[in-house]
Length: 605
Image 1 (tube, one colour):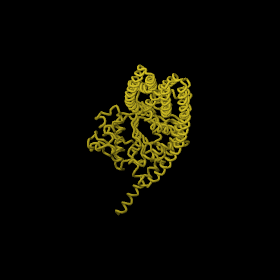
Image 2 (cartoon, helix red, strand yellow; image 1 turned 120 degrees about the vertical axis):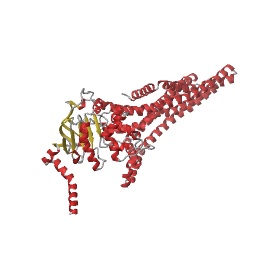
Image 3 (cartoon, one colour; image 1 turned 120 degrees about the horizontal axis):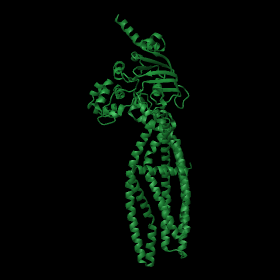
Image 4 (spheres, helix red, strand yellow; image 1 turned 30 degrees about the vertical axis):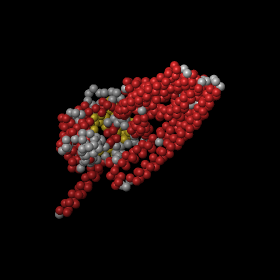
């Protein structure tokens, strides 16, 4: 598709979007903008009537000129104010709609593969930056439509005075072309610096937010990150400044070419008046129109530059949606009629997108509902990655994950997630009310107090919630007035309660659910999971991940991972007797406590 065809498609998208969101204001803004530009253009004609009427004593022509000039001035002022107010309302609604569509598009991505793509992240960062410009796009498009009407009217009036004056608008074409080319230079510079721009944004957030403030100050790393920010920012500015200078130079050349045509047109009309081939009114009209053309060229360069920026913003938006749509095409659409009872992994190997190293290799597992299964292993063994495959966030590089014999890739990801409950290792601290922060685990029951309290009790955090100033209505987090901040363990308790909102998920995933909890509380929690959860989730497959093996001894089945492979599986007693990797890990973790007890006993003697 050619560049002009893409432009027309982008602007067509803008028109459809504006009329879909607010048809009334979109139409009013269009009509009023055209009326404003048209009314200011015909002033030259009425000035001619006034001058010629006054010099020839034609009172009718003089009166027509005065009345027309008064009317166009009034209509122009009224239309300008009305168009501005309609555009402002429309831009606010467009911004809200674009935010909503961005959220909806991101949510349509069933997996996490795109979030491992630098191209996607760059496009997303660029789109976030250009969203305000995109919201203003319809207004910019209207201004260009109004300008086109003004140019067409001006050309017609120039032709009335002299066909030779039609050469004047043609003198503007080089300026328009050079402006388009210069804007392309700037756009390519913005795209080239998108990654650095994303990095500087991340560095700024890291240095200025409370979450990282303590670590950075402890390690004395603020100055180092500040220098990195300055270096990347300067590199970005250098690239963008060079592009801006080239754009300015091209614009100056175009403006200079038109200025020569402007001066020539005035001189041409002056000669015609002196030769008696035109009236003084014609000269005044030509001068007024030439001045308008001059202003139109300057305005067109600014508006055309803005239009190209809008085109680039729309293109970024379309490319982002195309990425989402492409990822969405890979989603399955099938839904099982019955609640799943078995998940199998057949020869599953996996490596993250853009990498060569396999983090999982030839995994064969059969996991059934009604059991508590623990995944254990040292850091980097592949436990969380395996969970990500089971949750459908990624697809295996080789092999198949099946749910009741159906390839997980064929299933509708939204339906599959509705069968799950999960606490992720890096849980989110939702700074909402306690009711909402827990209820998000099952949005259909977000306002069901009894359901939320039952989930809180299953998670063992009922006492903590009861101590909140306003109970479930308490605002959590320091970001809001009167918000209550929680400890790391309490936030984790809220996350566990959120995972317990679904009464009978097919699979309940608990990935290091007690990472922020002290050892004693952690032991209590895991005892609860393997006892109370057996009752609450008797028909569910409960998947536990814990770095402390003492917490999973009561699991029905334990899977031991090492270097991305299953090296052992069985219950605690069987694995201890086998004397393999599980036994070595268990003894290594128990040794410090055994040594401490021995030292204590020796001191007592």
